[in-house]
Length: 111
Length: 121
Image 1 (cartoon, rainbow over the protein chains, first blue to last red):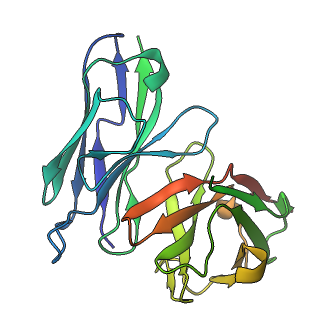
Image 2 (image 1 turned 30 degrees about the vertical axis):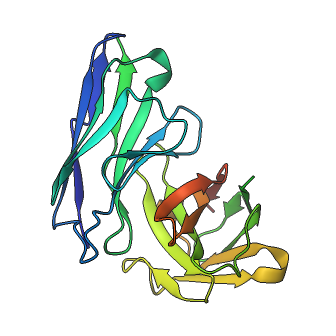
């Protein structure tokens, strides 16, 4: 199985400041079709996970542009340019090149 | 509008078989490219994918649970059923179903609210 490793596991951020989450996969997520199957989800407290970003860097419709995804191969990053109170929750990366596996999650809280 | 909702027992005893139903609307599992998956989350822990079924009845299972899990669909009822045998307290979790569409490359873009299943004698 492909292992997804996120760092850090928790993050305390002052509102308006940036935040960054790293996700590393145990093997490349670049498929033969040229696409990279890396996704980012946010699970707000008490809610189901919601898809934020697909294929590394594409924001789902309605996701604020303060969220951005980048990376390639096995190394990926989710960045929040200016954290807002509504961004608190646990962020998960997920791969789907070989079945589906999630990272351990990164808990983001407000200072 | 796509919605999914999980239903089933909230409490099962060790060694029993769990049967969960995902009832959905806003899409059809007879449409090419569409799939429904099951994901679980033990209290305070990370998400774990369990199984997925496609419109063409292609099924995928987590290797770690393959011998215990079965996924089926009833297209006419807009339902997907997950059965898990030999339940253990470590299987206590919130179980979610979620929509996938191969053609749009959307993985789990819609989720149900989840259902908490506790395994205890």
